[in-house]
Amino acid sequence: MINLVILVFIGGAIGAMAREFLMLGVPELSDGFPMAILVANVVAAFLLGLVTGLHKRRAVSDDVNTMVGTGIMGGLSTFSSFVYGAVVLMTASASGAVVTIVYVLVSLVLGYAAVLFGMKLGERGASQPG
Amino acid sequence: MRALDVMWVGLGGGAGSLLRWWIGRIVGERYRGSFPLATFLINVSGAFVIGYLSVLFSVDWRDRYGTVLNAGVLTGILGGYTTFSSMQLDAAKLAGSGRGQLALGYLLLSVADGLIAAALGAALARVQG
Image (tube, rainbow over the protein chains, first blue to last red):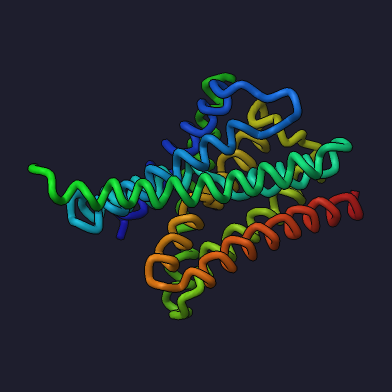
């Protein structure tokens, strides 16, 4: 139990810091499109799918799954900034509503595709040696 | 960004993730349905709080660090507490088990309620302020 607490805490800390660094590295678009949050969320969705697929075929342990899946990817991805950014964008300018709808839909579709692709990739490795 | 900001984001992210994990366990013990209730409740409540705190303390949503509030609480705790990736994984698992409609409904409901919650949180802070 205490081990899981440590794994989730350390993982969440790593993930949140990675998101912060990602925000510094990804340039902001002129129309206010929150590209950095989109990238963090889609990357986290892909990697969460990957570790879930690997865990399903026991290529990674329960502990790794908890630390990476629950901790790091939960910390890297964010729902609160995603929806709050969308709310702010909606009212920010005349074209805000369009940007918001595009942002939300692109996030959902890319995020879903990313997690599916990650899972497939993680599960498929079963046929490979090692 | 200073080293102190990184520390606050890390501490907050760790604490928020623990809170998410803990709530997930509590909800999981009491609710056995197929709707991903824990992640839904976590995300919608986190959306409300970020809207509320951002307006109450006049934090621009692009300012991710610089103070304990935006680095530690907004970027750290709330970012670690809420999760976009688990929401997508929940949906993919539902769809994979033949519940595609529930998966789509869950995604749309999460986003719609999340948007409403963030707007309500912001509105509450405006009324107070």
